[in-house]
Length: 266
Image 1 (cartoon, rainbow, N blue to C red):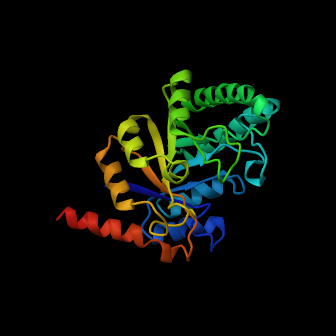
Image 2: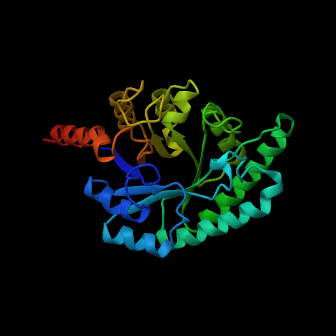
């Protein structure tokens, strides 16, 4: 049976972030994830987790201006010092919240001639982060993001993620496999997850195109969820989509999965 997390940065956005923990629990989630939790204190998040008996599975290291159209942080040579400060910030939150994994977003390069330098910077920064988070027993993950939604993103394929893992050879470094982003890049998530499940530290999903909930696009989620169940992957699966209706009304896939799973166990 799959363990699903609700991504509170996208789901339950009808409520303030601090109130989304309760909303997720009321809908049956036992785990949550947040893209960037830093608008709340770590202590307030810990209280919300405890009150609702939730586990915070994952959050991101700060990415500076990435979501505002900028290059981001982890790959930009001129921002090495700022990245290390962001790692320290994430460590402070992690010491209190104890997530399973921390995600490092590589960022974008807008000058093609500088791409090798950006890739080298990202590898150095990713290795630094993995070493820092290993001290707390926390996995470090990184993800590929499609270049249709985010032009210039330097890691945008499963092959690049595998190559990065091989180059860095860090014991606590894993891929974060985002089904939506890799499907948008023309890859087959079912085939990739089946082959490389042991190298994946976290999975996220949304339907494609549109990034809505399952059933709003082209992805066969019955096949996807079944393939993850049958693979060697044992971690959480994150619902990181943009509901096209209210979040509660978008969760038919989740309740149906739980019902079918319960029936199989009879």
